[in-house]
Image (cartoon, rainbow, N blue to C red; front, side):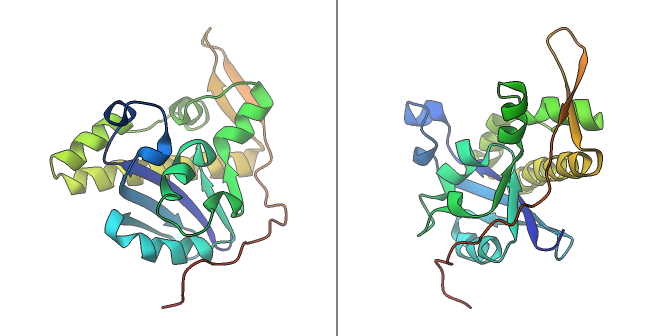
Length: 191
């Protein structure tokens, strides 16, 4: 899997706080990352984002769930370039393309892995506001782990699963293999 990176972010505020659905108005509280090259989970607080840019710029591909619809829109307010130009696997978009609608990570995780997320993003905001950074980190890295495991399941089985409204388990054929994506020019300076 080379230098692929799995990413998930948490924010310090919500859409209710900013008065509309616009991810670019949200602020990062913590970013969780798994790097295949090092087999390590790490996290970055808002002040640490310059270190994260180097990781993302060095990645062969960034993997996540709803990256284009959420994570990248929040992160692009901090980054000099455009993260959406990076080689990316947005699992949600791949699945939605096949089934015709968007589905939550928790639904795909339960269907494919038999387990899901440990909570929701509003809980993460409360952890941040109460200064419970360890709980925030653990919550975010659990989401990264679930995303990583859904990715690996799909890579190995060429399908992911979810339960439809009737409770029937539906298999969705997917192809998570890298397809020769090109990396953009790095926007940060080397250390």
